[in-house]
Amino acid sequence: MDNLAKIRLKQFLNSALKYSRTENLFRLPDGPSKSFIDLSKIIYMPEANYLLGKVFWEKMQDISTQRLINNKMQAVKAVGGLTMAADAISCSIAHYSYSTDWKLEAFTFQKWLQHTGDMHKILGNVKTGDKVVIVEGIVRRSASPIYRSAIQRVIALAMELNLDVVSIVALVDMSENEKCFEALGFRVNSIFTLQELHDASQG
Image 1 (tube, one colour):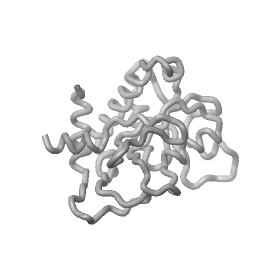
Image 2 (cartoon, helix red, strand yellow):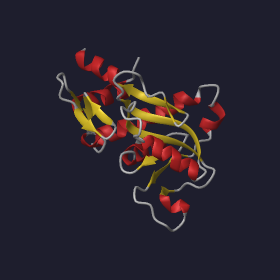
Image 3 (cartoon, helix red, strand yellow):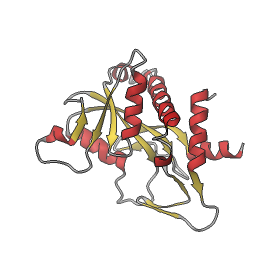
């Protein structure tokens, strides 16, 4: 059963969920879709930002109990993603973690890369070899085979810079049929699915 923080965050997401019941589709970078959430309407709100930190941190704690990656997950130092979508999420996780015994740094990959050395592609206190978790707001199974999602780009960047990617955690898997189970070989752990949001809005 969902805890109160997760239930409240789900309410925020449902308030921003748009769903087309007609043939009119939203034109998104990864192809047309019947569903859309504008996270910018949510993630910068004080209550929602706090809830993001708590729910993501708790999801990571839950993943750390899985036997196969337990040791690596507990050694994770930082969370981050591609600016700007993941910035509010990673900072909220870092902020919330300060009140726990598992304190995490936040980092971001710059969208406009400088040519002054590889690590200048990252803002934050991380270095080569650090174990990290990649976070993202929205993932979906792409309708376009040539589209490279933000989460795929940030995984590629992290591997290029020799960061040790341990896990991927996304806020919502907006796939309308099959779930987005993996990106570049990494399992995508979503906190909510589109179906869960729909079910909650109907309840």
